[in-house]
Every structure is written in C-alpha cells, then in structure tokens.
Image (cartoon, rainbow, N blue to C red; front, side):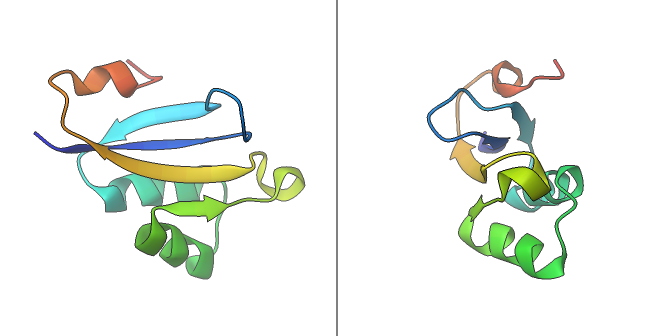
Length: 80
C-alpha cells in the first residue's frame, strides 16, 4: 500500500523529523504546521513535494515528501 514519508532537516544529514502519512496532503499539512508555514509555502510543498526552508526562521533547511510502498510503513516514523 502506498504511503508518504514527510521529513525535514539539514542538507547532507539524517532528517531531523520523519513520519509516515496516508496521503501527501497529510504529510504537507503536518510539515507546514511543524514549521509554521503560511498558505503560499504550504501550497508549494503540496504541489512540489519539496520546499527549501530558512534555517533561522523555520528551524530546518528543507521539507520533503516521498512516496513509498514498503510493507512496514511504521519503520519511517519517529513517533512509532
């Protein structure tokens, strides 16, 4: 079953945050809430599944959403 991995962090490092979601929209909405993104940046993340962030303002350098169809979605979750 396809699921979506929402992650954010610093370039070249393991993501600071990573979780699994049923839809790409759910992942984007969660990342937007975590980073206090406005409507335009949230829409860009939903559309592009990637967004460059400002480390000083947002606390991370990027937010990214990828699809996956592995058998164990919980392996992607920091909260599991």
